[in-house]
Image (cartoon, rainbow, N blue to C red; front, side, top):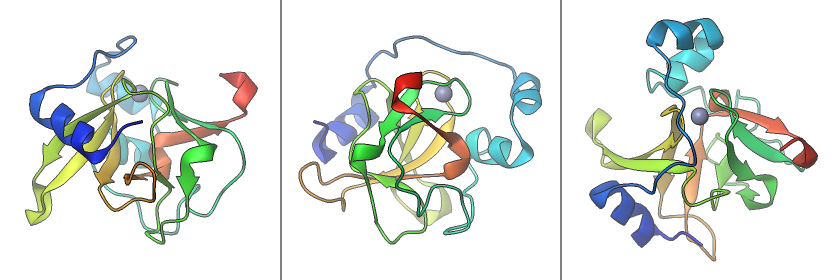
Amino acid sequence: MLRWSDVLKYAKYGNPEPPRRVNKTEAEWQALLTPAQFRVMRQQETEPPYRNAYCRSYEPGRYVCVGCSSLLFDSASKYHAISGWPSFSQPHAKNGIRYSFDEAHHMQRVEARCNVCDAHLGHVFPDGPELSGLRYCINSESLNRVEAEQQ
Ligand SMILES: [Zn+2]
């Protein structure tokens, strides 16, 4: 299980190797993604709180990256964080997400990106529930929920 100390270590010293890599040009991403997905995933924008697809959705399933279909989260780790965005206490795999320090908007945050295609997903905070203490605050625009057997 990943904890805050692991997230800080990855952000500071480097992330685990991804299982594969997907590289596309900005024009290719623009053709593949909707404008809203492109703004979040490739331009690091944040979607509106509450008015997004998965904020209040707790259907069982798995959440994959919109950009490359990599498995990112399981519904079992999704919880209600009252933040306005879908929140998870743990990623599906240690090497699924890459972490870096983000000092935009005069805040010190840890950004979470897809480790396979580098899409911006959201941020990670150390105020999540037991046991991990982690809160992955993720944009719905970066996620697709699929049935467990589809992955
Ligand atoms: Zn991806």
